[in-house]
Image 1 (spheres, helix red, strand yellow):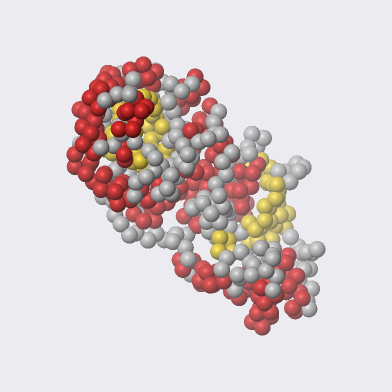
Image 2: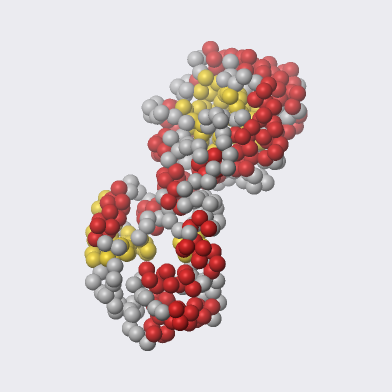
Length: 466
């Protein structure tokens, strides 16, 4: 259930620039086939615009743009280029829907990078946009380093771009130095000065890319620039997952298929080699993991106690860590899930045993069973399961990254262990279901995962933990 705090009274578009800004991440480069797979997935989840790259960078970048442009995707395909006629012609030759023409507008960029004055800059932008329009292209003008540009000149060059035929203007915080209040004010003012729609492109140098992007949308921007996993120059830009989920949770604005975000993140993690930190919002391994006893007790009673939105919103599930911070309720819940029911005195003793082992960072199910046996004097490791348990082997298609499938499986409810194995099958998972019907439903969900070729299921009749 979402908690809506604000309203946005205009449509919001998502522009993903993983293929352009994202590939500018240090040590990251995508093959043409990888770019095509990313573009298809972005289109599938409902991204409105895909910035496919700058064809003037290299031949392979241009080829990737041309292939993506011919793919027949629903999303608008953009090519990025400088405000130079030859660059515009090269972009136009890729058969894209729109060209994104950029030019640095701050005094620093004009003086040290471009070595041009304001009038010359306006002339360059105007001619480039007019030439693109003559080629039948829609045009977005990007005022690079807009957040450090003199406001008087920023409005002048944006109005000139508008008059030349640009129907979108991007206002980037190129070095990530803005604050949400200032961003909101800037977009509110520009919305009054200009007739065209505005894009926001916020860098994360001070960790405020998401907050600044949302502030820009509140100020009147209609398109948010994002990348998968927040890739980009230096510290990257606003991540697709954070913006899309925040728009839903805070503003009740639907953009992309949220349940597909984890799979998309894994795909780009594999292609880029950049693994998000465990505490990364939305997609990080710890995003829905609870540890402290008082937190766990609250979540077990009502998940909204310590969750601003349910993990199911993006197709994930919550996890409870058992260690010295753990309270009574967490241990009781985990043991009962394993089919072990103890009285309060026995439970209290197990919790105390856990707290007296502070060096163990995470108690496994087998560890809890061992403690329960010690406290009760019963042999719990050979008890017949009270729920339907199964071992499911999964065979992956040969061209699929096995770990990506394994992580998708890990996110499914009822799956409590996932192994990558050798042999005829690639992955083995253990499932604990409440009924055979629920087990069958789980099997169907596993078979629906893209890249799963076959499964084999064995029911557990009796368990022996060693």
